[in-house]
Image 1 (tube, helix red, strand yellow):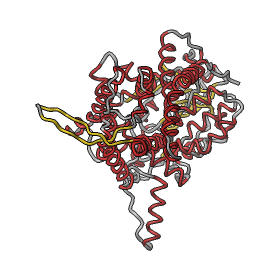
Image 2: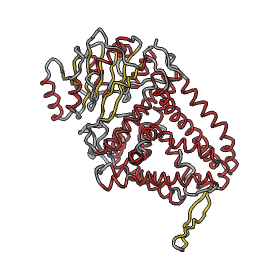
Image 3: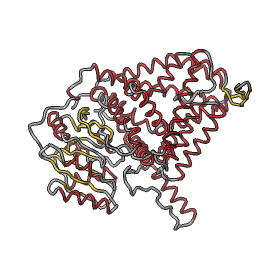
Image 4: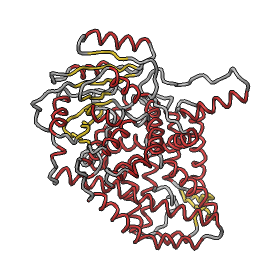
Length: 586
């Protein structure tokens, strides 16, 4: 049984969170005095409880970044984090290269150019397009004896089914590596990862580090691909000693006997995380090797970025629906490891909670506690008055430098690692945060649709990001009656909630317009920037990132958000700016 990780990081995170609750909760609870009926009381309780919960996630991100910095500079890393010396034994190894209409020759070349002497490459081809099948066959023909093509009669269970089929019928080696279609393995990948499994019988899998492919041709990848590098650098290595090392689906070497004991990869979209938790319950731990670096492509367009995000959202929702209860009851997985699984996996489904909070903070709260007030502008000696809605002055009871500080910490915590990493390159940091705001901050409506659609349908579809035959706009059913066609097309939408569909994009635009109007009425500059991002994202779905218009307009949401943050800082000096919404920080 592999030893559990240290609990010190999560003890620190929860200690900081409990301290914040004890310090600020009395002030927050004073807001309840404003309630005058049950709906207004519900609105206030929702506001308070979400703030408390947002602080928890803020402390989580702050704690991870702080411990990652300490871990990198000062901590004496355990042997778990180091690469073992080359193994004397060189057992047979298989590399399973998975593809589905997205074959990339550069990637599979990295599989056949390993310096390890005893391995074979299996091309697990789920492609449906003849041109991709021909490419796979042509490549395999160039490496007879080393490369073998494996196909199956259906696409049941998606990637998990593809892997299980290959392992059950063809690849029988004691160790197997998994490479995605865009994966580029270093030439010593097998040499270093095999050495770890050979030296540690309690290690069930070895997860390599990843960075964005520096040779990526798309301008989108060049703009925000650095985020992959920074995220992996700050959030993964310390898990060897302070958390749960996750198998991230690719760029990893796994034990076949662990796969057999588990009964194969779980039939879920997040088969990687499912495998990792079951392996841990059997007594095995994963190991993350920071010095073994693979490269992966960032999505080459906003459309493929959105497709990938929808797959992750519904896949994570499915994992929590099917595995959260099992994980909670697991006896051999420590609470430190459970927390380190739940915090990141809950992140996407909780977007729906944030969406509901936006409704509460920006629609319900002004309805219950707002009052009409004019804002006066003086320009060139002329006076302009604009009507707005302000919140009850009794909300000022929560303000103070300490509340502002924790609000700012919570607000910036999710991007703190990027700020620290790029602090020495302010222009690059500005560009990255501007581009990231237009992409990631605008995903709330899309994520909410994914979570809701999964909750209703109970299904998650493995949307292959690079699949060029991927359900872009599958024809609607028209061969039945009107009611039958509507029911079938609605069911199709619930099953996939594909970002290409007009219903998804229409919801995003409607959300941006509705909240945008609210932001104007409430004079919330930051929330106005976020609403603009909501409106832009479905438009960027159809536009090229290289467009000069796109490259300019994507900065507007970030500039507005930061302007609102700046204006909100006036409250520290006793200037109660009305330009910043109470709810947006979280």
